[in-house]
Length: 193
Image (cartoon, rainbow, N blue to C red; front, side, top):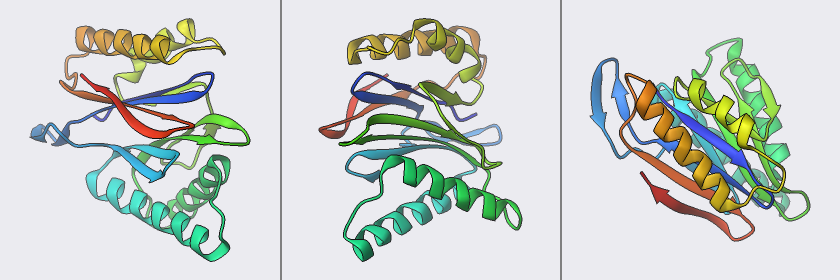
């Protein structure tokens, strides 16, 4: 039931996630933030079983911070994406993590980037990405509307259109969403819906 999407713009990445926490047909709470900060300029959008989601994201974040402490330099977004993919692939052979991720980041050298990863350790650099039932309705809309010089206001309008489509067409649509932007100034909440 988890749903998240991301859009890479000219100088930012905008991510949106639902805020529902549920188990089977039971709604547990409606204020869960599934957009997890890795450092000042990178975030995971993570979906899946609650235990796997929390355990895996904390493991990756701790190891990224350990690397920065040991080596005196932070990993860039591409390096974190490849490290995450490697850990998913290793776990796949023994005790897999059932979680899908979007990694959004901003690096001074390369600018914004967005990576999509799934529980089978598939890694893809994308301009728009997402997962969950809601992404069935939003990704085609985003493909039609996306262009390389996308502004933040245009990206927010795209997300709003996607959320409206999900609420209109998906029977089990989550009621609440949070939007965060990652850019040269760091990570911040744009709005909640």
